[in-house]
Image 1 (cartoon, rainbow, N blue to C red):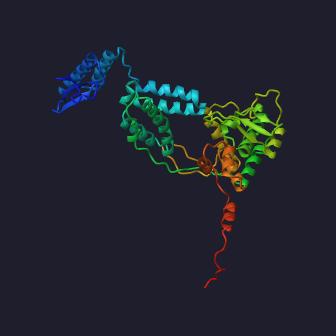
Image 2: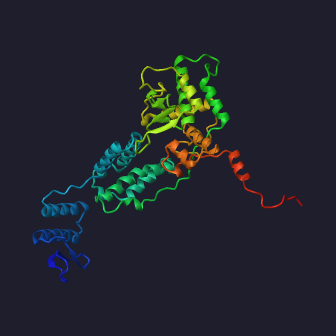
Image 3: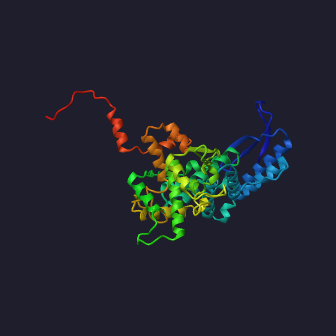
Length: 406
């Protein structure tokens, strides 16, 4: 039977409870209470738990009921167990307030997939009951569907972040993510466009006739014009597809020759200022003017939300194919996975960064212009041309006399 005692050493002001576990071990634990009444409630809870454990009936639910009763007796307040679904939803609400819409939509999609995997009963279970093996099974199921290791890694990021936040706030003792085996991803990255590919792309978008030599309809011409605008913005300003399609005339300052906008992926919501390249300025000045400053530069593409932008990426892929440009497919995928193509709209951003690197622009300045927060991230977007690499090799001085073949 559990009994109360004072610290025999006389060092602690708290009451201690002494009890014997079902396997016969004698334990002596502090109640962290100085009042005997509250310490007695602690001892009663211990006794109730030991009684159920002795007969094999101490289930998780029973343990929580005993703990909740103890908490109410000691504090006078009901103990609320935050459910998995409640916590993940509260984390999504914070992401929506503090991060961009793109990040929120991506985190929301992963959260919904994970909660569906758990099922309605487990989703409403206490957060601290979430086990690493459940997250592992979710991980394995995504891989079985044919998702790439990189996609699964991205799926686990919000889950890991939410659980780490719960650990910091004391809702769980330790995040279970440490026991989850995360798949290793073989990196695939975009390639930059070559000059000949850019020429073919812009020629296709400038054409007034189709492959059958028939005049394009007005709607088709307008759509090609808007894609050409987006391509110029990606090439000369390094803008992402979402930022291009959502750019408004109010973001274009012809007086200062600048484009000013807040990138969707910017965590701090800081405005990015890009000086206009002369070719980009000339092209924008050639576009039909608008009396409304809030009009989109790409009207037929403008306003696409993050969740619907995949269709724009697919449309651009078809444009590349019609322009006769090989998209350079990466490793094959199975199941629900998709094939990664090394050439896509994001390749324009790689091209923008790489052309500056080839011209000798410092990585620090390139990071400023692309909006990258780290130099390591900018380095991933740098693809030096062969000629640039050769010039670098040729700067190494010769340390020996010319050699001749024997």
